[in-house]
Length: 247
Image 1 (cartoon, rainbow, N blue to C red):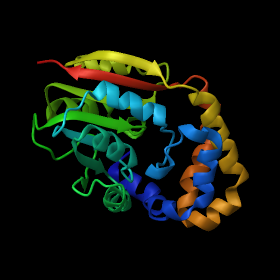
Image 2 (image 1 turned 60 degrees about the vertical axis):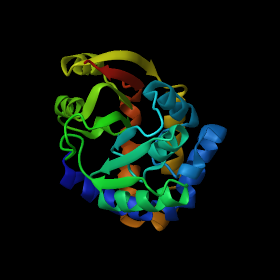
Image 3 (image 1 turned 30 degrees about the horizontal axis):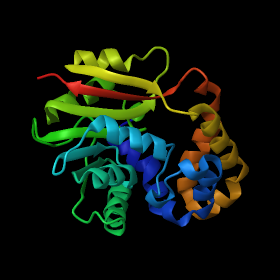
Image 4 (image 1 turned 135 degrees about the vertical axis):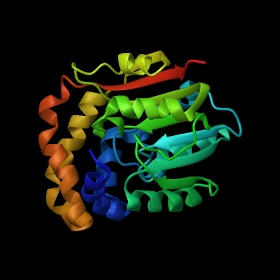
């Protein structure tokens, strides 16, 4: 998906996301205590995911963590704050970046920085960051090898890249990472992903009219996903991968 397409599809959604109690209730009902409600996330990230991110990123105080495809910033804010790390969030959608800055202040990480940039063109200097994370964003990038190569370019040697995405049978993220100079340390399906994702989609469709009232035109992107995605889910697991950039 190009930056222009992402802005067109998700701009309205991120503008109105905080105004949709129905969407937040859907995720709370499905994920219960595993839902990081205070982070106001969009997508399928859980407290268990974030704890695993923290373990695998192995951040130290003062490290620079870059969150690519950060959305409104909640997951990256949580991981960086827990580790005492600096945070730079990148997203192609302007309204997401604006919302992330406000959320970081509200969550006690006012020095976090957020910019518009893409997975394949971060605008960052080479070897300039200690770790990169991404939650459920790489699947939307058309040129995934280019995205992984860009992550390798901006990471220092020994830096870590941890991300969640969906992996259809034709796509081998571990092989892609190895070609870019990474050593893969972990690849695991996230707990309970299939049942929970299906339940979220069912609830979104069941609450279509309310979501359209709360999100306006921004509702269409999640309604379309809820209609179209379930048919391919069984063969497209949600996975978490962690890799270290070779020296």
